[in-house]
Image 1 (cartoon, rainbow, N blue to C red):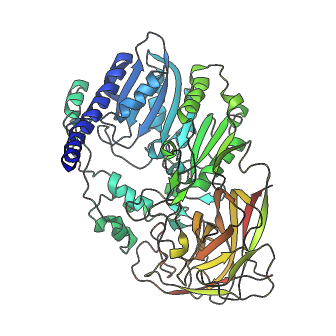
Image 2 (tube, rainbow, N blue to C red):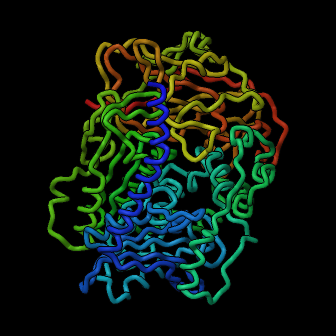
Image 3 (cartoon, rainbow, N blue to C red):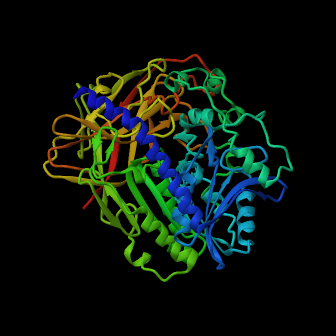
Length: 626
């Protein structure tokens, strides 16, 4: 029996790779049967820079619409001597439906000429690409943009340029392209509440190319580029780094330098404050910019920027230039991590929490959307597709609404209270709809050299530093620098769907510090699963255009940036919030000095208080569906 098992395992070692090779060969063969393939086309921009572009279009004499994907990531067809098929698969799905699929690297990336900067600047590159594609003899002049993460984030700002051929958008996981929208000033996920989000510290290490990288000589022919790309994909191979350790380095402006990373882009970004003028010169979309493109938005509950993403959807629905654009904004909110939509299964697990069958017919809906706007088909997309499709955790079901939040929600205020002893899971912090009377503030010590560690959460791109998703928070709630406030056991279920607002009344013995909040679903067995979280740097409590420091002994009102979720707290569950002053390394530590923070390495220990009384009613406001 053992001998047979050994033979079987040895057989698998040969069969599985061969199956993979066959599958790759099949898709390439299937694509070549239906598509004209034109790779390493060097598309010219207005300043003479050429961007590497691969074009896959149907074998037809008819003019066809275009699905355009522009990216900083490597889509070269070859890598390490092996043929890659991910792009071919995506191209096949588009071409078989009658679309040309065009994928392009941003300037300065891989085979594209020029110098790279984040979000594919200058914006005119996107506009020029639309013009070039529109003018091709095989194009019908209609272009739709599609992509997730960095392949989505450039779309909004380029849409503001209002190219006549940009007919529709499908941005997915697009938060790093959102600069300022309403009360959110995240500047492309660099900040949250005025605090640096450390995802880009990690992401830039893996993505940023050195200015002294090898380059293909100007004048190389398309034939040369195709041949060379079989041997050189121009992708840097950065040594692996323990990001959990690397992100602890101080000062934070030297984190990439400390791990020998490429840091030209990072160096200028890390010094920008939330309202720095340069945030408004790059590739970010801000709410004072035009927008007039029908869009099908995709967001997810455990993505890094769910709230700004939803706020942008609402902003465009209200403020798009034309009535047609305002009336043609649609939204899907999945219960997954960043860009994890299609990885949902019959038994989807996000972190440790099982949330049921979260699958959705994404391709069917997306191509119906493009058929409507790029082909002009009179299909039933608008009749059969809800304005907002959102997944409710707890009941584990897809729901629909005409707006976000759903029309039937009502904000209900829950007040924080205790006898001054809400520290840790073992304290006596309560969450109730009754406003407290006496002020028995909860005190805790925040030591930046011993911060509260990020455990799960709505994160992306931090390497091994933070694992995203829902995790049982009880292990964290043993710390005395976490204040825990919990409702009584619910006598009936409650659905919370929408933006979650929170106001804290705080004091401290330092000039500046941070306050964090986390919303949690507590199960009958005690498991405490995180839903969303946010943070606020107190110096920015009056706005991001000024810094107002604290004075010892004074109490300050701090409104935190809204959180978002759709979660059904079942009968027998409890609603909980955690309050602290750090969530590291998702967010950079406030060193409590009142200085720049990014160039400092010495910290001050803060003694912070959260007040709760009739005069200082610290609270969280939940959108409860009636």
